[in-house]
Image (cartoon, rainbow, N blue to C red; front, side, top):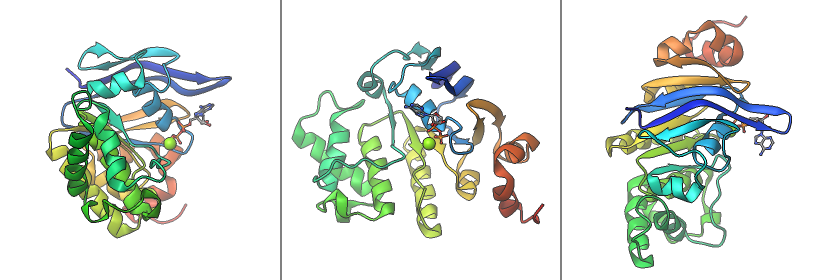
Length: 251
Ligand SMILES: Nc1ncnc2c1ncn2[C@@H]1O[C@H](COP(=O)(O)OP(=O)(O)O)[C@@H](O)[C@H]1O
Ligand SMILES: [Mg+2]
């Protein structure tokens, strides 16, 4: 049985179909990539999965149970967490306090005291490589460290499934490699992962499978190499990125 499944998911905003009849399945332990042009509906899909928006049509299933229609905190408690594309540290709080808030919600949150949440925060900051910055104000962090803190907050919720929404945007090559390494390390702890990313080099090296959204519709789904060589995907999205990846010339 799939860990996470979308069945004919559609999300409409007044006059606009952001996600259009999307079916997807994610199996236990997979790292699945989600790619597509800006505005394709990737973040909206994450918002629908995590309950920020109820779907206009269709359902989301987690381990076979229908979760669409539930409130975000309930879905979090079931074991699904996500990062935000526009990083959202809690202002005026330290890095450790930010991570501790994640620890108080989500799958592990219910039984935790504040002290236990802070302990959990320390562990997770160690795991993501932010331990040295734990007492800094989150406003003082570099872009790469903010992205890492976003990941730490999501992981502090002790999810079974984690959705990473553009955690590599704005990073340099070295930082991207480190982020890829961290995502692999997260998978090695037994989690199932959806990675939304424009950095094709990273997608190629970290994903078991990818699917592609274009104007809200899923236009491809399969093994990485197959999808990246799919003519529709190249036309809709990859273009220049594809040529950079394969070293082929301009049009
Ligand atoms: N809350 C909202 N209200 C109205 N339109 C929205 C809202 N959120 C997203 N959209 C629109 O839905 C489309 C998909 O957006 P989004 O899911 O953010 O795309 P992506 O993450 O793939 O770049 C865009 O046209 C965007 O403007
Ligand atoms: Mg987005």
